[in-house]
Structures are given as C-alpha cells and as structure tokens.
Length: 153
Image (cartoon, rainbow, N blue to C red; front, top):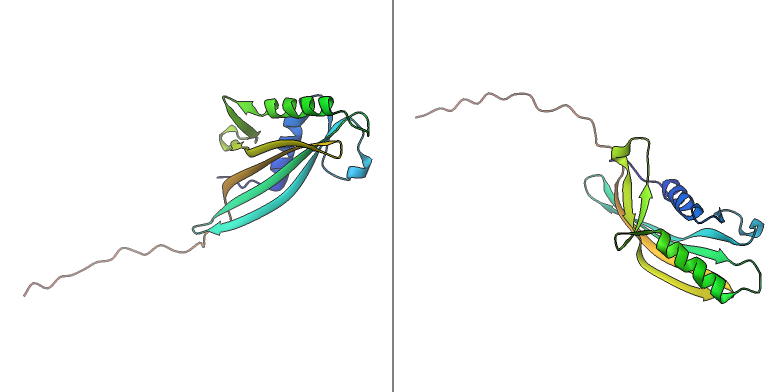
C-alpha cells in the first residue's frame, strides 16, 4: 500500500477540476483571476488504528469565483453543477489519484457533497475518508526452529 499525502489529493483535485477549462488555485486567494475555482482544505484529521494503519478525514470547500465580483447566481450554480458532474462515476462521486505504478492508483469517494452560495461565492463542500498506512514495522529476527522432547512416563 502506498501512503497518500495531502499533496497527492490536492494534485488530483487540481487535475480533475482543471478539465472544466477554468483556472484552479490553492494558494494565495488574493491573487486569483476570475472566473476560477479555489481549493480550500477546511479540516484534516488523523485517527490512528493499530497495526500501522490510520484513518484520514479531510474536509474540502471548493470555491467558485464568478466573472464579476457582484456575482451571478445562475453562473455560479451552473459552475457548481458542472463541478459536481465532473466527479460523477457510475452514480458515485469519485476522485482518482494516479501514480506511475498503475497498481497503486486509489479511488476516493466524495462524501456529504453540498453546494451553496455565500456572499456571491459558490461553495462545493465534501469530505474524503481513507485508511492509510503509517510508520514502519520493527525489523526483528524471527524465532529459530525449536526441538521439543517429550518424556512419556
């Protein structure tokens, strides 16, 4: 199993959203050029489970900035619906994370998707949960062969 980092998820999101033909930002919100999408990580939790395994929970808010600062609700809703449709795979919302070794690719489900507009900015919110490995096992020498003698008296 390969460890999935935040940057892997962000790159996959940037690639998937970029297919819509608009700029995608994730740093320095003050330097965006409208219209565009902006990836915002809201929360990142890790819960450690035994045997070198952890549960990662990430909450995202993809913001849509319309052409005009005054906003256009119709344009914003269409952009959010296009974004939602972009993740559609056979009735599920899926984010594909690709690696050079195709066998290590991961497919993550977007949960609790929600769309709304606040102050003329579109919001597409969702959560991602995945189990991942952490740490590395202690390297130790295995027990040698035992010989057991039983005394039958």
